[in-house]
Image (cartoon, rainbow, N blue to C red; front, top):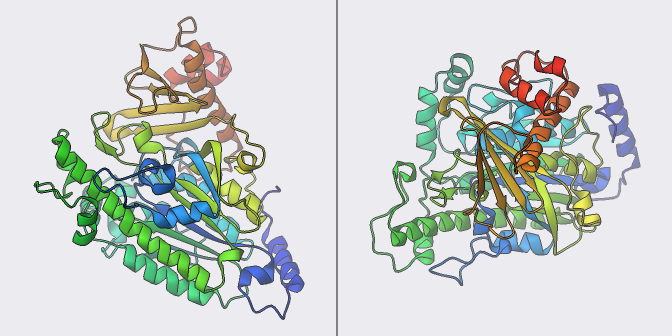
Length: 499
């Protein structure tokens, strides 16, 4: 697909599409312009393995579904078996979703960074093609201060919490996260799904009468800790519990609780998932009531999962194990996408931008982003690798992970530790092969180390394609030590290593 056109070309294309539209068609704007609408649903902290279409059954109430609305959507569309995030926390994962770029390229990898305006967001790409755009979010990491508002005509906080711009500006300009940390703690309480449903449904009712197709983005926050669902719903997932765990202050747990208490925390998590799914089901029902279903591409995904001490950690933003990075991914577009199909192969968050552009016939940015997922459902191509990264300077954490077929590699840059997993034989990643020390061409892990090195070198090539920036990524060049390692292994020229 060609690069994004200039404004004159965009106007001309919009006029041409309008001229082709039937004046007698009383349906939605999508039918009149010939382009489908887009509804993008992102559920924060939603593990794929806790959703119904991915085979989950709650331990204490196996007859209760966590995600019947998602199950219905999967029955009517495509489910990607291996949906994977780019990282394990909200801010960089959502920026990858919106830009088609991994964190190493979009660079919004902590709360002191904002998106370079030289990069194109999905909302900007669609708006340039005449789409009406609106986003409704419910967590502080989706705040417009980070650049998420770019391209949205409406971008509204539905968290029920005051998210003052000053707190974000302090983090962005002075690195002062104190107020931002307090905002995050406050955001863990309460429920926001009803407000999201109300605001997005009202916007849809207005959009149905417009001539233009629309892009509606809805970010659902409630499954994020703390786990405090409505009491009746919590009871339905664990009716016999008599212990003291409440789901509040989950991050304060220094070690794994007793098995029965941990079971209850998981039940509370499941109940919040079901609470959110109920409201998403109502939004999809609103789409149907407005006769928009056949003309709307629905994409359902999540930004990351949550850890419940599977590897000794709780929450997220700690590791790149499967419980933290595997997410649901379902797409539905009647008459275009097959119904009820499950497809194999790595399907990353950064691939959604190009897949949407492909299905909606929208020009791509001039630089390389994640590839379209079309080959997965058309040819069964499962040869694509997937890369993930976690970089947190304040915790001295820097990890790179590669999934290549059933092989998964995690390289800890700080600890110089390599873990290699066979996901088919060990899906819970409990039995890694481990190597400690710097890259060494001669050792038995050379092939796995090469996957990481090739990925880093490929990112360097992609970075060169990106448009001129305004200094937003100036401090993210490769370190001299890493350049030397890559050059020694033949992945960078020797003169590049000395830059």
